[in-house]
Image (tube, rainbow, N blue to C red; front, side, top):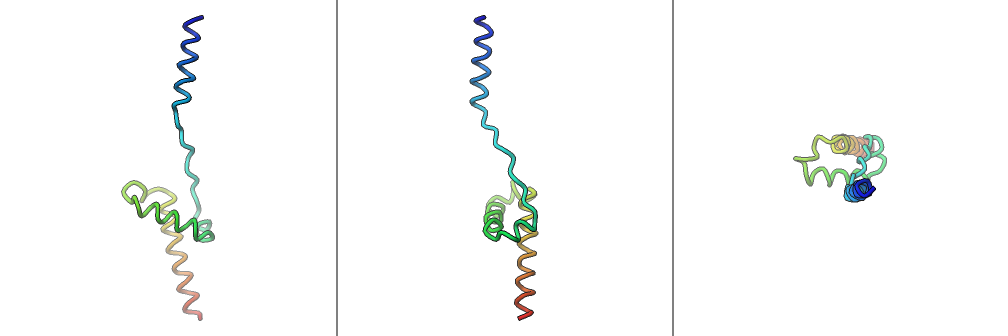
Length: 80
């Protein structure tokens, strides 16, 4: 009885110590283009640590969305 109580206490203690972070949501290019504040936030995070984040889905999508947004703004400016 004493051994099983110690095992249960140890398991609860270890479970309380684990800080599993939920997976980060991946945003699509269209979502990022539609929400410029979110896009700016993602670009800032990615450019702050490109060595670790440059190949992550959100960074790749943010760079693509940034390019797409720039092209849309240039096209609108040229249309006048």
